[in-house]
Amino acid sequence: MYNVKSLKADEFIDHQEILDTIEYAEANKNNYELIDQLLEKARPVKTAEGCVCSGLSHREAAVLLACDEPKYIEKMYKVAQEIKDAFYGNRIVLFAPLYLSNYCVNGCVYCPYHLKNKHIARKKLTQEEVKAEVIALQDMGHKRLAIEAGEDPVNNPIEYILECIDTIYSIHHKNGDIRRVNVNIAATTVENYRKLKEAGIGTYILFQETYNKKSYEELHPTGPKHDYAYHTEAMDRAMEGGIDDVGLGVLFGLESYKYEFTGLLMHAEHLEAVHGVGPHTISVPRVKHADDIDPDVFDNSIPDEMFTKIAACIRIAVPYTGMIISTRESEEVRRKMLQVGISQVSGASRTSVGGYTEKERPHDTEQFDVSDQRTLDEVVKWLMETGHIPSFCTACYRAGRTGDRFMSLCKTGQIINCCHPNALMTLTEYLVDYASEETKKVGYKMIEEELKKIPKENVRKTAEENIEAIKNSNRRDFRF
Ligand code: SF4
Ligand code: SF4
Image 1 (tube, rainbow, N blue to C red):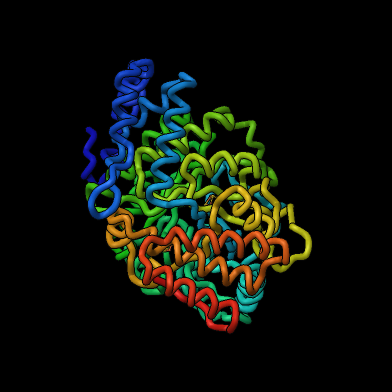
Image 2 (spheres, protein in one colour):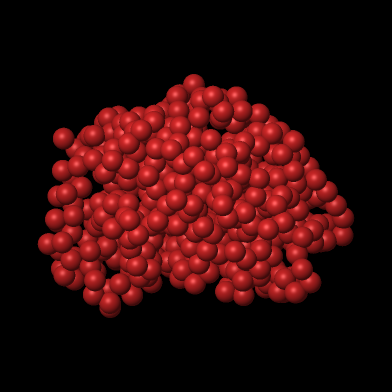
């Protein structure tokens, strides 16, 4: 029986509720009066303090997703962009994944790190190697990482992950810093989540892969990850352990996208209903080729157009949630997705253990093939040329603005006086310390224009002064 507040996976991700939602959406997909009402309801509304947005329920959002009338799809894209502009402006936060270990005891059939893959080289970084990878990442200009490791209690116990986090935060190479470490490791215990919180992690990310229990069990035939309930209830344990920024995601292509889309939104509603705060981020990866994995064996692959529509509908349904797209996707797909609500992208990613210190991209041990292989400098320049401010900001988490405090920053519309100058100051750091001459030229021009958009005069003045200090000294890490 569906119960959004239940702590049991089967009840907050109720199979029948998902089927009923899909049926309801199908029955209403040409109900244009309803669709117009939903789009109107979802639009941002200006208030005395800032801007608010109602979002949509999973049933409402499913109706939008089911609608395939081009005119209405265009309207959806417009509303998605409007929401993005209201809460995220034209800023795009950049990050990189850091693979610590590909030892894994699970049998996930879509991932080359599965236990039965005997020919892939297994590797786990030593602390010296972590240091070398972090220096390589800092030398590119990265400030925000997402660490990744397979599940293996012997090779990758929580103590190893905690040691790596400590090492990462301790390295300050030249003007470099890693200021936020997000963590993408297997579902674990409340106690371990508490340890991660104490280690100062940013977001805890765990992809559900699929919300369909039957498919989930087939796709994870062996290992601890086989336990659907333990995996699905992980975010509740993370929140109990004190982590209030959690990141959801499904691996699109494994199951029917309608099922996944509905499950994802039900999960977000569940977190909001039980913990008072929804997911900090939602990622939208698609199954990709890698080592012994052929994406064509999964018959639920989605074309780019549908993928874009999914992203737009998520943006409309959960307006305050950051949305992430990785280098799994090509430049062209990423460009489209930026227009419908994506707020974070990875750049210059290496998806193998130890990949950043290798001259050539190592293909044989990648977790997935990287479609967008541009350097960070190229991605930064491209973002600016397409009208986006690349941001390396990590201020909220470091100022303790996590969970609902972050959400209230979003809702009071103070983001323009906070994120915007922070983006410009961290972009200046990037330009001064790491950018090519060409990128610098584009960047400084953009910063000059964007500074004018900060409404509060005192904030604008301070940002200008800090930017000058970054240009003329080694002072770094200014933030609002
Ligand atoms: S997806 Fe994660 S848990 Fe599954 S095999 Fe790959 S590394 Fe292991
Ligand atoms: S100020 Fe906070 S919400 Fe804004 S970009 Fe920085 S970390 Fe994100």
